[in-house]
Length: 507
Image (cartoon, rainbow, N blue to C red; front, top):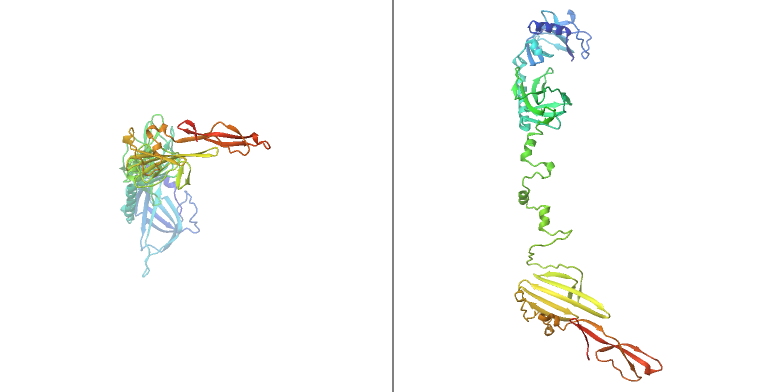
């Protein structure tokens, strides 16, 4: 439904304003123009249709102000008016004959009540929008004063929505780059996006610019909800510089809500003053943890760890051994009512005993350390095992030394370290204890090594019984063949090492 304000109205309104008279048309004209295209553009120079096409005229019943740049004029056609059809509506100043506004519409019917036939009532309101329209028409009242007062209810809905927004977003809340001022000289850039001021939603669909006068300056965003020509209430947003602003109601009764969005110093440097995010997000800066911070914003991490009964990696590394890289126990290791074996090296079972190579075990509260060495010297196998049993219940230490099947044992109590007693631990084989004196361990008669001494020989005679010398063993025999007198027997003495001293075994 296209509409225009005529050029004649502009000229007439200028003259009225110059004479300080209201530029208010006073008459509605309804016409039915044949062949009119309701969707076609209207010429601003169009005139009133011929008299044969005019179907009804009526005075303007009421007028009102939507905002400073928009005014409305209304007429009511009750059930006594009709019957006719119309597709053209005009606003006319009857005194001067000036056609002020034109609307083309689809053909509509106005029916009057006749007998049992009920007529219809039509209310037609035309809105004129131009700069300073309210002042030019000298209109200060709103349509709410004379139209069916749906506006009060709709305003109540708008106000409840504004208050709900205020509860969620606070006095001001901006998202992304909405109304973000940037640059270093005027005009400054203004970012696009959505913000809320006083609960009123203000949207900057595309980036714009703001001209700023003298610097330094504080820039403010002023928003208000005002009626428009389309009958919709829309947000009017304005950015301006001021020393200080507060929410206010203007002379026309519209509420304005303001907030500082930026400060600009004398050098053109901009400081963003916009509150970011919803009210909950703004409060979360102090009251809540941020998801993106991954708990790094905990006020007291030590207390939080204690409440959660967890340790940090640093604390855990200090308290426990590190499996991958090893570790060191610096405190006392206490093991109660348990039995387990810790082994270092290899072990084999032999003669119903477990042999360890440089190993130890903790068995039922007792620490048992076994060092086992087995080596081959010629055709002779020598094995040595030292076993240390520490019994925590008796606080006694027992040592057992085994060599080639011989076992020597000794037990001592730490308090008697310098005065060992001669009590043997009954668990060990002490058959050879009389040959072992722990006070003079270097004088014990334990054989620690064996060898063969220098070779000797003797000539043997056929059919003669010959023995190697005492303590020696036969190591070779030379057979001459047909001359038995030339056969030679080789022998070597058997020597043993007792505490570092080599001795030849006597017969």
